Image (cartoon, rainbow, N blue to C red; front, side, top):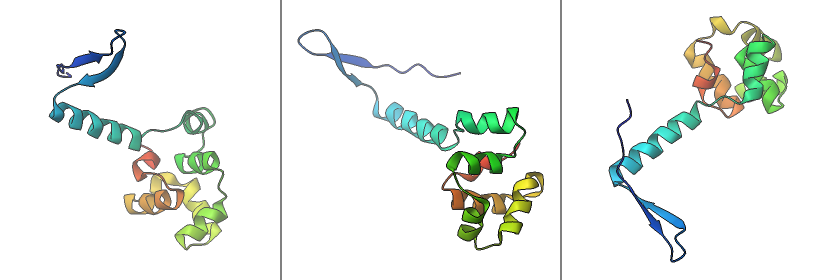
Length: 115
């Protein structure tokens, strides 16, 4: 359960809110959670390709980003055929491989985890 945060709303001379004052620790925790949530977010298009069209998350992300298999393979230093096998068999990929693919795509590896 989320803990209530005490805060004050500062208003200008017209009564319009312009700032919020809150405990600094609560502010830091809120920003930490926001950064974490953003890091593992998955765009709607990726979810649609994965869930509705049955594409692997690796393929869905690649298509969403407008990259070719060759683009990713080049960034990983492997052949296009090797990357194609990875994309088509995501359940066999180790976390270390997902990390390499994610780095090549410029995303977080957790965004590629199928579980």
